[in-house]
Length: 396
Image (cartoon, rainbow, N blue to C red; front, side):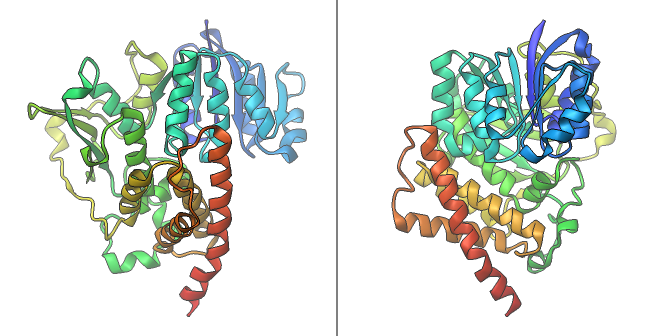
């Protein structure tokens, strides 16, 4: 019986992972080691009871009493806090879903690799902020990292049986998000509710807004560079409103391998869960007779400055990815909270990178995880200090 842990089980990816486990037998087919979540402790406890987990962990210390109460009599251990997350990752498991959003998922993922496990990586920030360290850690312990982003899973599948030396380009497709058809001059006035109205995908709040701003795709561009080891100039982004083609790999003979499927994250999750086999999945089958057409448009960097910033990060490398991600998270926090406009997010990230570049050290290669975490902290401080200036300019 495979031992499984899910980090971020109450989020969209975590819930869909549980759905697939349930369809394959649930607690009777899998031994669940650890489940972790945030403030939704009622749901965390419910899933821990259903899957008969050994331990359930909330990231928030103040939520521990509620979690313990919800688990009373179940036999499931309860814990809370950042240290508890890492300790849960230290419990040996054969397969771990890393779906904690943001830099908070970095330390548990690193710790899990020590056990030579398979890490299903939905936390794209891990590769963006510490890609070389993460891949080296996996190699050191004989662990495997499987991509769970729909785009990177598609690329991974298109590369099966192929020689990376034959790859000419990788094409990431982007839905364009909720605001893809808006006039450029209107974007600055976009509200949180408008940015959340994604036409294709049902995702969490933060990733849905990141889709509208294309920061999500910017992270995926950097992630592609780190995971697949291709040169930045080999990575392209194209807007594909239908979200049927999830990404493509072009080869030196002119052939292009594309992964197609309905807009359902269970494609990528299920592939990682069952790899190297393919299992039947409860996803819609494409009907090409009724599909109509597939359309594409350029990813305009004037509309999506996050893509331009991603190119700058790849040129700098070192700790630039950690700074980029941290500043992006602060920018998103303040957009959601009303302190920044939609277009201000890219401006804040760019200004933060400029300040840190001027201070020196941004391009230094991290030698250990602590180097990444220190840059994360520094970038958050710089970005937070500059939010007020953007707010003042908006008011003026």
